[in-house]
Each structure stands twice: as structure tokens, then as C-alpha cells.
Length: 444
Image (cartoon, rainbow, N blue to C red; front, side):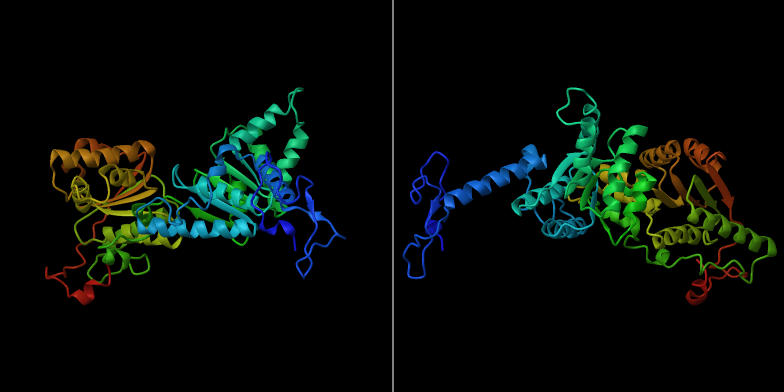
């Protein structure tokens, strides 16, 4: 037992009231009397040693002013008000705390600026410091700048020594990965760094604003090891998450797949069956590798919506994003964002549709033809046309009946495949009568 056990923390300017500056004390025996045969460090000495150890670890960590970012001042659910994003962040938060207590493998945070990924990464470093474990933080751009500067004759640390320190540090947090210059030299240095840490299974945290599928192939290959790497994508709102699942109100489309699309309906002619088979093949090939545009035209009930929805369901099975929009409903949703009670802004909704990786615009031409509606749809079409973003359009209208600006883009054979489905409405039999609900479910 230490006689300094009840002492208050002592600053360096004060003399310790227990050891009187000697920095050692006699421990107490079981009977409460000092054991003059032994000397142990006083609490003030232990406190000073701990302070110096923390200061050394903080200096080594390279955090600077970021020492303020800790788990204590980070909300476990993040700063989003959307339940899905809060749950998403909470999973990342729990994983970050677990990593800080037992650093193993790689932990990757991706997402837009302001989603909290850097706070999570820095909090890990601060927790490591508190646990007396060294950890090093640096942005990818600063790392490359320091490496370049180390070639200078006046550099305090030679290139080899600095690079080895980074490669072999016990825990590395690499922030802003993907935003650095993409010169061959920069790519080579980062690849050497990550390859070394991956091969030696060194604990690493990577923070990136760039989506995983846009990173260099060698990096993606390493991150694909799910047993060693854990990836958390932050900042996805409900509308972004819906690009990986069907939105409410589209239960019918949710059941439309390539497997239950029927091309050999009894009332079809051989030409119509061949036409449907060709449409099926076109849609299936597109689903395998979306690129450019497909415009499925034909009368209501011919099967064009089924094929478009089948593309979406196929992509969802692959874990890939796609967004199915019924055009009249989309315009209604846009109008509703102007309401003071709207939970989503106009800009958020419009940008999410305009920028989605794969967009399906169903029932194009069925919307009201007001100047405002025409302008909004033109803005979506024109943006995706210029960006060459994968798009599928279904319509029962002829191009001649559409806005000229839109028709010229949908009909551009350099980017768009216009396919006319000549099968009749599957919901109507050969005598012009509506089929029963049961038989109509055989194909959509």
C-alpha cells in the first residue's frame, strides 16, 4: 500500500505534501505503520510519469488539435435524424469502440464529408492513447507531402526511416484516402504502404470520401477480404438506402423477375413471341452490365414494366444500387417537397434521382404535361444524357408526342436502344375481355 494513496494531484509547480519533493515514500504495512525498509515511487512521481507517457503518445499520434474528438463527445447515433442512418452509424460506432479496445484487422469508413467518419477514426486514436497504446494518424495527402519532403538534404528524417515508421506503426489511421493526387508515384507509395500492412496483418483504419467501388483495383481486392476488413458506409439517407431496396407502394414490381416473365403466351403470334424473347434478352444483358440507355415502348400491359422491374430485382440480388421511379409519382413527390411539413428538401430528392447509379423511369409520358413537369423531366434526362448514366425508360407514347428536347435524347442511337414491344396487353384476352386476376399474374 502506498502512503500517497490519498494525495491530491500535484502540479509541477507545487511540492508534494507527502514526499516533500523526494519523489519516493515508504509503503504502509498491514498494521498501518510505514515500512522503513522499502521505498516506492510517490503518487506524484507516478502521476508525472503517466502525464509524460500520455504527452509522448499524443505527440507521436500526430493528432494536433484533433485530440478534442473523442468517443465521449460523439453521439452513438451520429448527427442524422433519419432512423436508418442512425442505425447505420451506431453499428460503425460500436465497431470503432471495439477496435480501439482490441485493434485487429482493418476498419474502413466511407461516406460524404460531415457524416462523422473522421471523428470515429480520431476517437479510436484518442482511446488508444488513453489505453497507453501508440497509434499514428495522418491524411493521405500529408503522408505523400512528407515523403516528398524527406528527399530534401535538409529533412530531419530520411525517406527510408520515415516510410518504415509509417509502414510498421502499431496502429495506423489513414484519413482522406482517395482524395490525394493520383500520380503514378503517389499510387505506388500508397500501394506499398497498404500491401505491407495487409500482408503483415497490421491494424489499420482507412477513412475515404470515395466509394469503395471507385478505389484502385488492388485496394478493392484487399478490402474484399471480409474476414480481415470491415467496411462501414456512413451518411446514407433513407432515399439512398432505398436504392438498394424497393420503396413502399411498389409491391407488384417487387415480384417481377426474369424468372416469371413469360414469352410464350398462348394468344401471341410467332413474331410477337420472338419480339418478347428479344426484349427479354436485351433486358437481361443490360442487367448483367448496365450501360447507356434502353427505352422500352409499347402499349399498356405488353410487359415493358415487368422487364424494367426485373432489371432492378436482378441488380438488388447482386447487392447493386438501382432506383425505380414511376414518373407521375415522382413529380407528385417533387411538388410535395415545397410543403413546410415535408421531411425531405426538393434539392435532396431531385439530386438523389438525377445522380443515382441506375435509374428506371416507368410510365414516362403518362404525367401531366405542364411546363413545370416538362422542365423537371428534361433536367433529369439531360443531366443523365450528358453524364452517360445508365437509364431505362418505359413508355406507351411515341417519341413524336414528347417534348422535342427529350425525344431527341431518348432516340439518340449512340447512347439509347429504342425497343418497341409489339405484344398486346396481357391482361386482355383475344376477345378484348379483361383476364381474371389469377391468370393475369402469370406475367406482368
